[in-house]
Image (cartoon, rainbow, N blue to C red; front, side, top):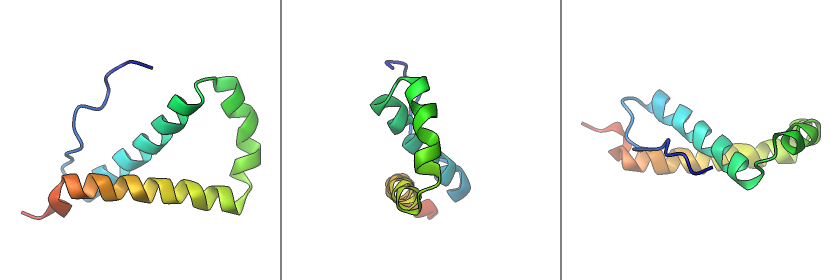
Amino acid sequence: MADTWLTSLITATPQEGFELAITLSRRGVKYTQPDAQVLHKLRPEYSNDAHELTAASQVIATNFQTVAAANNYWRK
């Protein structure tokens, strides 16, 4: 995946920032495991595991912290 899709971490609102954090997290998984068949095969395992879902939420939260800092926490 060499396509350039992330040109900035700057977003207009915290909601857009959170959505960007989710996108960053999902893209990270796709970069780590580019085989869509494997991803779909594993989904039932992690989607029903509370620990795995918590780990996914932590990754999103970390990415949201990064986006929020880049946006100066949306202070004007």
